[in-house]
Image (cartoon, rainbow, N blue to C red; front, side):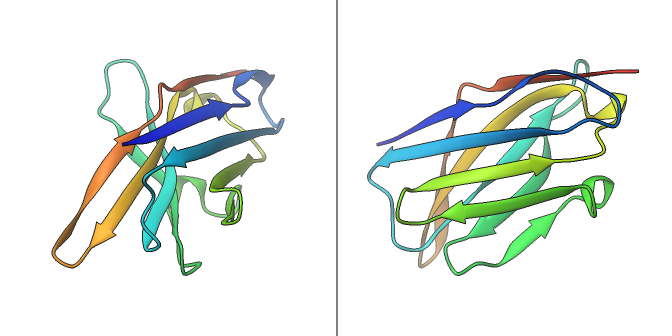
Length: 119
């Protein structure tokens, strides 16, 4: 089992910044992917950014150039620095960890943290 503890959400004005953190503990594979997904009211959960344990990062087009994902592998922690926030970034942000094995992976999810961007 893997436990994920998120922090850093809140209310911010458009153009502002927030930093999300997610600390993982438990049975974490050496090859894994950590990242962030978000879900706005009435919409499906969508990828925001992920980074694997080798350092490869992936971003949604809507956040490229504004958000930066980073990891501290020693602490099993992933961060999401969000700059130039827009009202459309408002959502519940979920931390995700995927343990990767030869023929697939298994996902774990945090409880979610609310990010609200006011116009």
